[in-house]
Image (cartoon, rainbow, N blue to C red; front, side, top):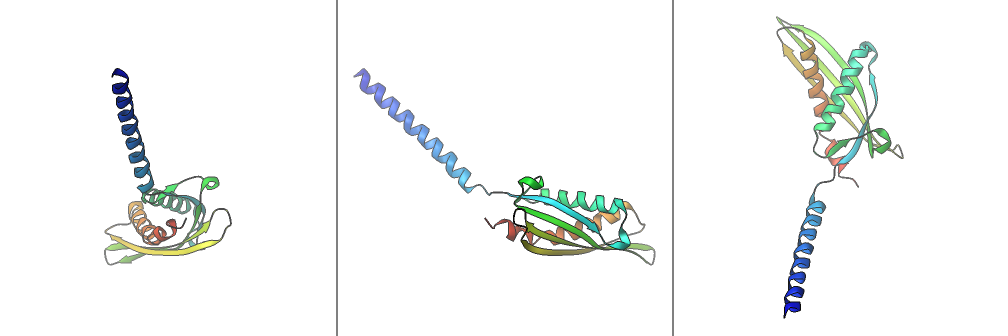
Length: 159
């Protein structure tokens, strides 16, 4: 009698354990995979070739990629996709008492191993304020990058 209770208790414990493992495995299977993406080469159009613009662009691109739920920013050697970027337009204009900054970016997404181009994404944006500032330039750059990255979610779904 004692052995049969022990066997029954052991069977129940094994079934509970198997249930927990299968629930955990199904949760992992339904969890979205995040594509490994690296920031590659960064270029700035000739008229804006200062080092600070290139650094700001690289920093903001990495931050915007990292903010995407379907992307995990990794070093290039571990990446599945690499995003190269070019700041193609960066203009300041005075509109009455305000200053307007316009920005355009071009992003080339390619396979990290084979180098095949998967997409060319573009984005542009503008920002206006009462005075020119570094923050105004960052807002325009951030919005242009965010606009370009909208198309990236379709690429990260590719196995």
